[in-house]
Length: 342
Image 1: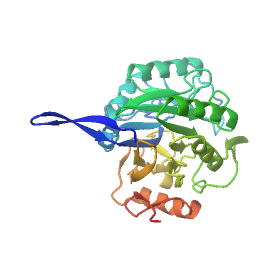
Image 2: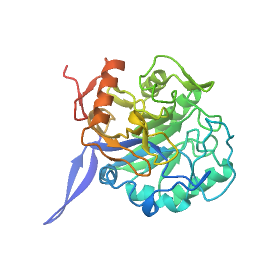
Image 3: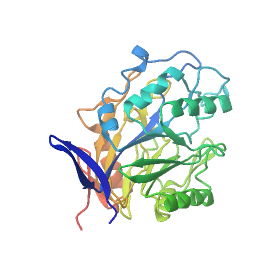
Image 4: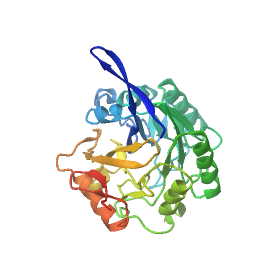
């Protein structure tokens, strides 16, 4: 068995220990405020957005999420003016907030990464690089990333449904990217942006989903395909609501983590304001051991805040039981995720 050397500082010095687990914190959409079409920014320059969750995020060995929009201070919107057209532009001064919160990797494979064209993409990449945050998902650019934790080489990739992203409906492409990372890395984490949007889309369907005339993917097939090719963790986002989780062949899948930190210009009514922070522990082989859904809620102008009623965990429990009854794991009322007894 592969071992990971870590150190524990004791009063008598540094004692080397063996460790064989990795904790991963994962979230859905992050759009910390926007300056387009008008200034819609949180108080105190956004410094309190992640107050209730950065302790959890920063303590994880690896923290991942989806960056829903461009980080730039100018540019021209690529979107139209229709009722379903939105452009998100976060100030470059907000980039350090992501590092301070504890994020290590962010997906850019979504329908808002190109809101300000190549200018916005290049600015976003520059800002993330300056913060030491890895990213992936734009076709022809950063198509994957690698992070080393506890001696483990972790490959990360991200897929979306837009023409400029690494497209998840192209399973040949998905297979090539995942296969390459599996060969080069010890563990592989896959992100996808897909599924129909809205409060009526909580349940995970079988087969492909269409939204606004666009193929948003067959997400069960996609997630299982990635794991069949050797991926160890798959997390999704896109519907703006939470969906079921699954443990398939011993590997963890979150089909949608919904909105996480989207204080403006995104509906936060009812379940649209559910903001889970899912933390899992896997072994060095990538096998799921246990996890926890930390329930957070959003209100306008405020980042994710702890939900004392744990309504988010209860929602994800119900959805998992309804939509993925054959999952190898189960969720309790407090959001604890455990493997089912055989």
